[in-house]
Image (cartoon, rainbow, N blue to C red):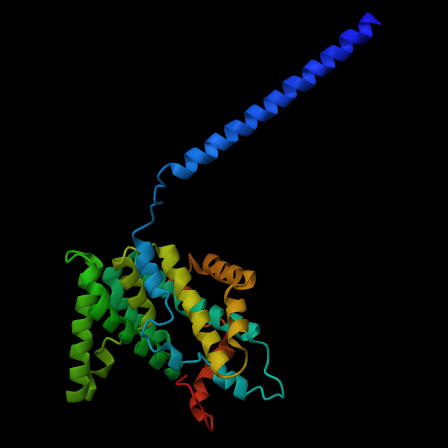
Length: 291
């Protein structure tokens, strides 16, 4: 009997101690919550380039990309059907084309901004479709204008990329004047293609090369999806669903990995059909886009 009583008293004592321990834990948690709620919160730091990255990824950036469909309008015209074809296959082809033909020039120019005019001239010679060439130079000159009128003042005067862009601007103005005075000088003109200028602008604004290439491809995807919405292929919510999808994120990541080390001599059209669709755009009976 005495042994049974001792066991019962020990169990009661253990239960009492467990209750006191639980109460102490609850009081400690309450004090921690009160302390954290009353103590001042420190604002997390962020990279200085994040603000510039948000500006350049904005769909409202006045580059005129809304006027181009990257061959989507011609693609739809050459695939007549009662219901519009799915947008993802064409978007995948459009991104692959940009990554194989243009991304190597962007990366090379970012790594060595002093080669801007040289790589701009080489890229112009390698673009076979005149419609693609026109769209690239139109957006490149628009980006250069945005840089001069809006972003240039945010970069210190001694920045190397800023000097390179200033030299390109002067050469483009000279080329424009030379074209109006002497057509024979056309072969020596600087064209101002989009990808090389994008590379130097992002480097001037201290945006890392990885982010520069990623946003370049993402902006192209946004432009194609915007054209698809205006062409009544998909709705605005579906376009946002594609932009936010894991598929698009993985597709861009795959293209970056596959083309990160590609040399300029190896850059080329990976989807010849895209050039055919873009090139035949001007032959459409009616159209709402410039390409």
